[in-house]
Length: 489
Image (cartoon, rainbow, N blue to C red; front, side, top):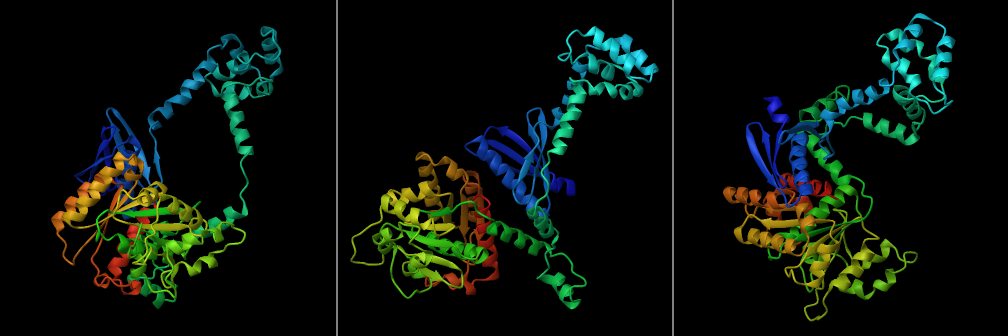
């Protein structure tokens, strides 16, 4: 049963479709490109690996060809498509070296120990002094007995070794050119040996009761949480922009933006911005914790020249424009809140703001408006490193999300849609299970992953979100959502 569970079989049915057989169940996946299909297959197997807590080996079947694919819980994978032919290549390379062999010199070499009498006839047979590689390996390769190989060792000093001798020389050169370990290698090896301490369940109780003398490894649930936290906390080589989308109001976009920012902020220690990119007025600023000022993106845009020079501007200078969420360790940039104002944010304004804010924040999580045709909406999608499609488990909001994805494909954003993550939020404590399953089946075929988040009474009143009041189930679900997104950054 364990083999069936942890060794899935992937049947490639077409260039854009596959079936994953696991434990007697069949899961079909589709994508618009071969690259997208591979990514979805890897993600499906990665989830099995994460659940098992160890790498999973799958067998990929494409017609008459079969090869292994090893996927690790962190998403890294090895696809050995040429494994079956690798073992046959080495003998084939050795055969040509034996072709020019001469049978007569082989017997004297095996009978006589001194190498000098053997070398003299070889030099007489080859007129060129150096460019004659064939005679040297002839004695070494053609003779089937081990003594011949040993007797040919002195001949290896000839100036033109070839065949197997050349391979040996290459291995010696590679061995001698290896890079010596550095202090970073030493420090990393120390960290690798550090075992995580259990902080939950009976494992933690035993560890505390014995003062650490007995320290069981964390349980499965805690190991899963630690793995997701590690993904969220991983180092980014450049700023990343996450854009949250659904053109329908009330689809959970603003709530999702704030909860993702809170999760990334608390896990990463800050440097995260939640940005309301509504062309007129949004509600992100209203749902954030209050700040001692009411400045918005419009005010920052008016004063953006103050931040044009990196030598004179600092992150502290942004404090009078953003609203710091101290407990959750992220900032909020609100949209215009002046009911009498007529100014709007267009694509050019978004690009200017994005260019400056990317210098101060590692993660920008952008809440969008409901107008897909607004230029700043399109500019945000174009700037996104990761799209997040949000919907409640309702027919109308889900249909709006599906319509959005169709429109983005028509605009040429296929790759971003293939890598997008869908979040399905329960609208009540008892959501429609059949509808939830139907929506999941649809969106897992058009985006790279689907994550469910539960209903939480702490979010119902529509006021500023108290992150400490969220249930443990909500926190865990949003950690899963953040980890799924971080996997793709």
